[in-house]
Length: 131
Image: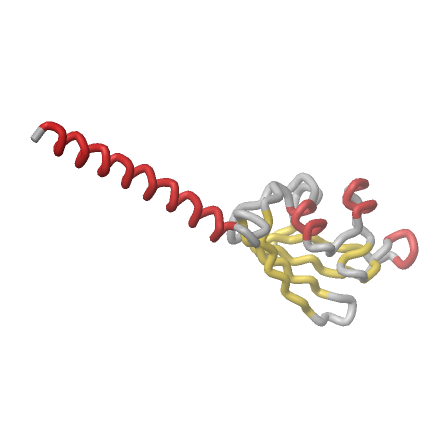
């Protein structure tokens, strides 16, 4: 009887280990293809007031990083932290007096996009603002 109990115990332990391993594999497979642990919304309001909504799935900590990940800003401007071009549209205060206004839920950001930390579910607006 003791040998039978030993085999049953070993079988149960093996089944638990195999189940745990299978759960980890399934979790990893479900995560593949995802680009991040946060999803944010970014609405870009162009010069002509047309709007385009972007849902960005990101693992970036900052808004600037999420914009770069989605190719809405150039790597050069991201590195500099000063944005004159968003989604290929220029707003350059030096050239035409226009600028990009970054807001979250209608309130202007108090810091630059590269310093603004994001959370899952955040909603941002980036508005082309004339002089």
